[in-house]
Amino acid sequence: MAQEAAASGPRPIVSYLKIPDGGDPYLEGQCCKPCGAIFLGERQTCARCGADQQLEPKKLSNRGELYVYSIVHRSFPGIEVPYISAIVDLEGGGTVKGNLINIDPDPDQVRMGMPVEVIYQIAPRKDAEGNEYLTYYFQPQTKG
Image 1 (spheres, rainbow, N blue to C red):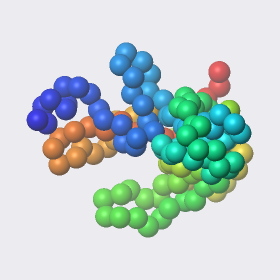
Image 2 (image 1 turned 45 degrees about the vertical axis):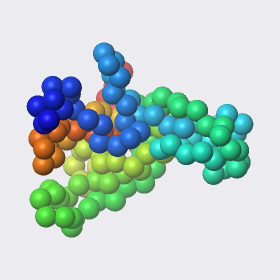
Image 3 (image 1 turned 30 degrees about the horizontal axis):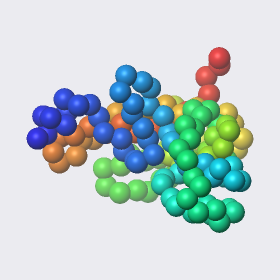
C-alpha cells in the first residue's frame, strides 16, 4: 500500500493545497459569488454576507504581503527553532497562515507588509506508512 501511494506522488498536506495532474500546485479558496469574500477550506455558508450554497472554488495567487508574524522559539520535540510563523494576505484575496522561510528569524530582517511568494516543497518527514506530503511555505518575493 505504501508503495502505491509513493508511486502516485506526494499527498497535499492540507485540503486546500491542490496538486493537478501535469500542472503546478496551488492553493484553493472558496469565493462567495454575492459578496466576493474568500475563505480557505470548504464551507456551505459565507461568514461575511450569510449567503448559503453560493461559494465556488477559486485558485489563489502565489504572491502576497506579510500581514503579521511571530518568531517561534519553543515548539514540539523534533521541530527546529527558531522559525517564523506568518499570516499573509494574498493578492486578489485570501489570507493564509504558514511559515516564512529563506530569511533570518530576526525582527530586523522581517517587516510587516513585505512582499512574499508561496513556494511548494516536499515536507521534511514522511508519515508512518512512508507517504510523502507536499506543503507550502512563504519566502521573500524574488525580483521578476
